[in-house]
Amino acid sequence: MRLWIKNPLAILAEGDAGGGVVVDGAKIVELVASGRSPSAPVDETYDASRHVVIPGLVNTHHHMFQTLTRAHPAAINKELFPWLDALYPIWAKNVRIDAFRLATRLSLTELLMSGCTTASDHHYLYTPTMDNAMDVQAEEAGKLGMRMTLTRGSMNLTVEEGGSAIPGTVQDTDTIMADCERVVGKYHDASEGAMLKVALAPCAPFNVKKEVMVLSAQMAEKYDLRLHTHLAETRDETAYCLEHFQCRPVDYLEEVGWMNHRVWLAHGIHFNDDEVKRLGHACVGVCHCPTSNMVLASGQCRTKELDAAGSPVGLGVDGSASNDNSNLMESLRHALMIGRLTYDAASVTHFDVYKWATEGSARCLGRDDIGKLAAGKQADMAMFTLDELRFSGAGDPLAALILCGAHAADRVMVAGKWRVTDGAPLGVDVARLRYEHGEAAKKFLEAL
Image (cartoon, rainbow, N blue to C red; front, side):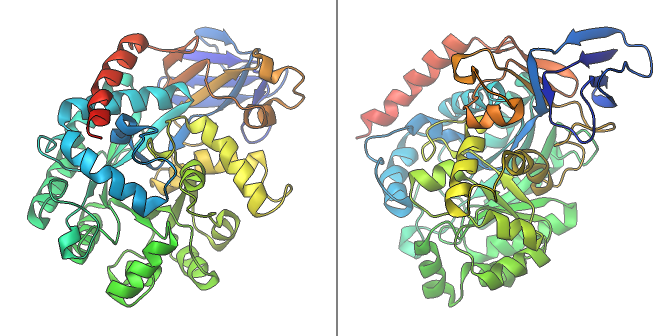
């Protein structure tokens, strides 16, 4: 069925698309110029004159289980390493598969309602009962109709071995790599328009052994997969690498075979000029996590320099205990604000931020079929209205979404199908989800 999303209030697309978008099946087949009609008959028309239409947002870094410890009293007002020290024992005791399912469902629903159509969750915590964590996430993404990169994380370097992970949260190398192989074989879809892909994601240099990094790089080469890890988030991490590996984090990345186009990094804050150039030359992507970086006082990502050097720059909400929500649209505003504080008011525009959250994030995930409104791309889009008080008086609709603080999409489409209408995710009892997730989270407070 050909659907014409007609005459939007504003649209983020290349060239003149003021007349809207034509969708046929799962794809965009035509952008319509202002004052024109589609070049071929359509079966249905949707009046978008109240809507600002943008490509579906792409979230490239998250920790969905952490929704269960948002604003946790043991962890607030701390930087990364003390924050982790406070939360690891609570997670080890309480993260079990039923709670994880609710956390995943809530996170994906919250993302979807904020205009996100593709998500990647860096899940690295494997406590008892969590062996089928990737299966749960595949199921939950399928129920919502969202695209997802199943990012199979891991930890196996405990405090006793010189790392930061604690017993009860780790797996041995053979178990990790065997499940990576299983998940790839079961879920990775290399085709255009895939709803599920798989990436390999050892957690960080300070909680994963070098052999896992090397084996993951070899498996990624074998199956043509993406690789993901945390890197250079804090100065403490740089000090850790210098002490344990006698090199800086980027040097370690190169040593384990990760300096290539398959890789995207979370945070990527503390790079020097030479490292920025090296990462750009290798086309290593960086997921900017502005909200988390500010909450934990980790630092400011060098987005403009990385972009200019050739690194794909994407956007992520990061963990819901270091962001305290899973709203990707809100993170666009934070990215704009911290970018202007880092550089100046003219150097980071709303168009830069939109690019990071769409095309840039898609590149981080190795996808060229999403992230843009263009003929031939997948029909993933988010549509916002400007009816709320916060938007009254706004002159530029696209800028207003970010500057005035949009946070909830009115309609969201994934692969040509409506997944949010009138602000409500289809097939989700939001009140029940809120209650069940809240009840599960109470156990994490009892751990104090």
